Image: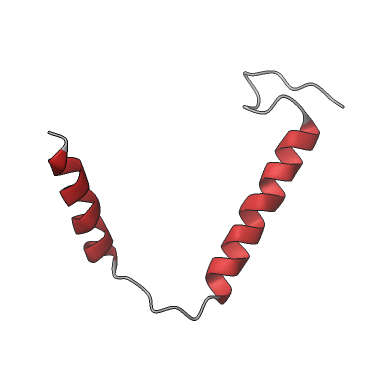
Length: 56
């Protein structure tokens, strides 16, 4: 297990980094293959802003 410098990577080892990379790539592949209807960016941002506004 190779240790990584915190200056170079947020992961403690190359194995952790590779596992995280594989996980992210699998999530992206699943999302790209999804047949669910897409949500327009403006709609997502409006919902996010409404959530943030609740906590002001």
